[in-house]
Image: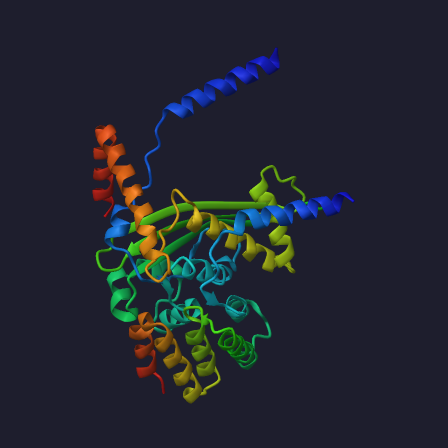
Length: 114
Length: 247
C-alpha cells in the first residue's frame, strides 16, 4: 500500500509544481539524443540518425508543431556526412525558413559546400 | 540543554541573515543587449571526466530554446570551429565575441565551465554531482550580460528532504536508463536550476510568446536593483568599478 501512496504523492506534486509551466513551444523528438550519440556511440551511423530525425519531423508536421531550433540544420549536417549535398541543402534551407536567425550561419555553410 | 543552545543559535542565524539585504540580480545590461540568438560553445572542462564537455552539449539546447531564444545547432558549431582550426573548448572561448556576430549572426555567446562532473560509488549508493558556471556575453560589445553558478547533486539512495527535489529525483529515475544517460540528466537539471530560477535565471527571450508580457516583471527587477543601489550607495560604487575593471 505505501509505495502507492508515495507514487501518488510524487505524481500529485509533479503536477502541482510543473503543471503550470508553459507548454513546450517546439517539437524536439530525438535531437538531443542524436547529438549525444554522435559523440558517444561507438556505432554512430549518420544514416540511422537521419532516419530517426526524419520521422521526428514527420511527427511534428502531423502535430502542426515547429521543430526546435537547430534540429533541421543538424539533419543537414548529417546529410553532408553521407555526402548527400542535395538533401543537405534542402534541410539547411528548411532551417532558414523556420528560423531566419540562422540565415548568416547556414548561408555560409551552403557557400562552402562542395 | 544542548537543544536549547541549538535553538538559540538558529534564532540568531535567522535574525542575522534576515537583516542583510541581498543585492538583487542586475539585469540592466541584459535588457539593454537582449539577445534573440545564442551560440553555445562546447564547455571548458575542469572536471576529471574526460567526456563531460561533449556529453554536456546534448543537454542544453531544449532548455535554452524553450526560454525564448534561437540556439544554434551545437554539434554543427563545434564541428565548424574545429574545421576552421579552433579545435579545443579553451581556444574557442578565447575567440573575440564579435567574431560570432560576423560568422554566425549570433547576438550572444554562452561560455560554460564544467567545474565538477563526478559520480562516486560507495557500496550500493552512487552520487552524481554536476557544477557549472555560465557566462552569457553580448557579441556586439563583449559585455557579460548574465552570469550564474549552478550545482545539482543526486544520490541514488538519499532520502529527499525537500519536495521539489523528491519530484526531480523521481523524474530522473524515470527518464534515465543507463549510467551516462543518468549523468547527462543530472547535468540537464543543473541547467534547469540556473536558467529557470525566478530571482537569478534567464529572462524570457524575444521568441517566447510571453515575451511582451514578461516585460512588466523585468521592469520590477530593474527597479529593485535601482532601489537597492540608492539604499547602499557605497556598495553600488564598488560593484560598478568591479564591472569596469572586468570588461
